[in-house]
Length: 337
Image (cartoon, rainbow, N blue to C red; front, top):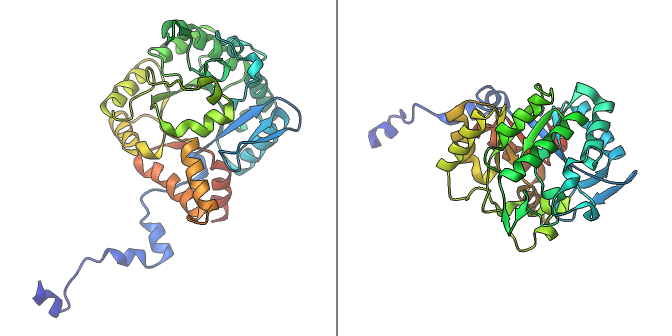
C-alpha cells in the first residue's frame, strides 16, 4: 500500500471525479424527484372565504370549499397530479354511529363535487375512508362495549366509499386498517357501477406517535382523548407483518398501496416495492412535516434543502409518489431549479 502511494498510483478509482460538476452529478443521479411524485393533502372546513390556521402545522390551513377550489387550481397549474382531501367536521355532527360519514351532502362530498366541477380530470381527487373524522370517540371504526368492531365497521366504510364515489372521487383510500375492508369496498364500488374508481390502500399503517398534528387538523384529537388505535393499526416494531398486510390488500383488489408514516418506515417502503412491484406510495405525515418546519423556523435547518432531501429519500427507497404537505412548495421549487 505504501509503495502504491509513493508511485502516485493510488487510488485509481476516484468516485469524487463524477461529483466535481453540476452537470456530471446530474448525469449519474440515480433517483430524480419530479412534480409527478407529489400528492397534496388538504383540509376542508365549513364557511365561505374561510381560512383556519393549524398551529401544530406551520403554513397549513383548513380551507372553506371556495378557497379549496382555488388552492387545487394552483396545484393544477403546477402540474401536481392529485390532491387528498380531509374534512374538519363540525363537532355537532360527530356521533357514536358516525352517520355523517355516509351523508351524501357531507362536507367532504360537497368539496369533492366542487373540485371536480371546477377542474374535472385535470387533477385526481383522493378521499380518505375511515370513521374518525365523524366519530364522537375518535376511533376509525364503530365501537361496541369499548371495542372497535371490525365487520360492522366494514358496512359503514362501504357506504362511505360509495357516497364519495358518487360525489366524483377518483381514488378511495381506506385508512381504517380493518381486516377485509379493501375487498368489501371493491365489491361495493363495483356493484354501484364505480368499477373505474381506484383504491389506494393504507396497507401498512402504523400506530404511530407522528399523527398528532393531523388529529388537530381534523379535530379528532380531543375525541380520542387518552385512547389509542393499537388494536387495529400496526405495531411499529413489526416489518414482516407489513408484507402480510400489503399482500392481503393486493389480493382483495387494491390498485396501489401506501406505507404510513413515511421517513421512519423507509425500510418498509423498500421491502414492499421489492416484494410486490406494485404502485407504492408513502405518506410524509403531519408529525414529520411539523418537525422539519419547527427546526427550520429556529434556523437549525434549511427548509427547502431538507424538504427536497426528505422527498428524494422516498424515491430512493422505492416510492412511486409521496403524500406531503410540502407538495405545493416542492412543486414551485422544482419548477425554478
